[in-house]
Structures are given as structure tokens and as C-alpha cells.
Image (cartoon, rainbow over all chains, first blue to last red):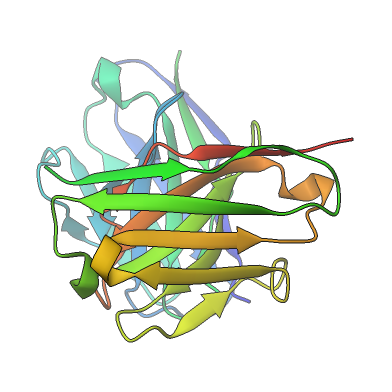
Length: 107
Length: 117
């Protein structure tokens, strides 16, 4: 099983600041990483697929990068609606796995 | 409009069974792979099972032999038969869709399964 480790566990930032979230995989997943955003009481929403491609309707302030085992989600300037939990997900190998999540909270 | 509507959750005793359903609309169901992902209260996401467009099935080790995923394209419905339930199966069970080779692009709102005596 490929283990995904996200860091930090919690990120405390002000609106307008830049957020950098990390996801490391226990073995190479090439570029088969997606990022999801989840707000309280809501289902996850796809942000980024194949490491760096924004999903339909996702604002340009969200960007993804990386390949192999190290991946990054960057939110260039946090809007109030961006405070949420973010998960990375690999579908390179079965079983598919998720990271444990990074909570982005308002400082 | 894409919709995934889960149902069938509830309170069940350890060792019990349930059949979860996910009714799909607004897209070509037969062209999409379908999956179940669960989230225990206050915890992260855990992939449970997937079924491809060719009916190939995949399971997490934690549910293999106890859960069975299936799909009925004519009814645009996804199912998850959950047997031999344990306390650690308590979670919100989401249905999610994806095009083959692509990530989950839409999720339902989930159905809650609570395993307790």
C-alpha cells in the first residue's frame, strides 16, 4: 500500500497569505496525485488532478506541482472560503489511498 | 446537473449487514467508474471500493471479504453490500464517480453507517 504523508497537520494563516501544503508518497506515483478540499458538513471537492491540472471551475490561485514522491498544493492568496481541510489522493496503484489531511485555519 | 444520492445507512449491531445504494443522474452512468469512500467521525477519507466500467472490482484490505460492490447500469445505481460489520466501520459513506483513469470528480453527500450495540 502506498502511504501518503501530508504536512503540516494544521496551517494557521491570515487571509491574503500564501499557503503551501505538502504531500509525500512512500513510493513513486508518477503524476497520479489529486487534491481535494473539504469544508465542514460538505463532501470533498476536486481541486487538482494529475498533480498540476486545475479541475473545472477552480480559481487560478490554486496550483499544484510535483512528480514522483513529492507534491505541493499552493494557494497563492487565501480567500475566506479557502479555510478548509485539504487531502491528497493517489490512484497510481491499488489500493487507492488518501493522505491524512492538512487543515488550513484562520490565524 | 450531476447528482449522486446515497441511501441505506443506519444503526446496526456488530456482525450485522446493510445494503447501501447510490442513485445517479445527470451523466452517463455506464461510462464512469464508481466508488465508495468513507469518513469516520472527525477523521480523514478512506477509499473503500471501486467498480470499473467493465465491472472489475477493487477493495481495501480492511473490507475485503466483507463488502461487495456492484452496479446496475440500467437503473443508474451503485450498491455496496456491507456484511459482518464492526465498530470501526462506523463512518459516513460517500459515493463518488470518475472517468476511467481520472480522479473522483463528483461526490454525493453520504449516508451514515453506525455500528453499535
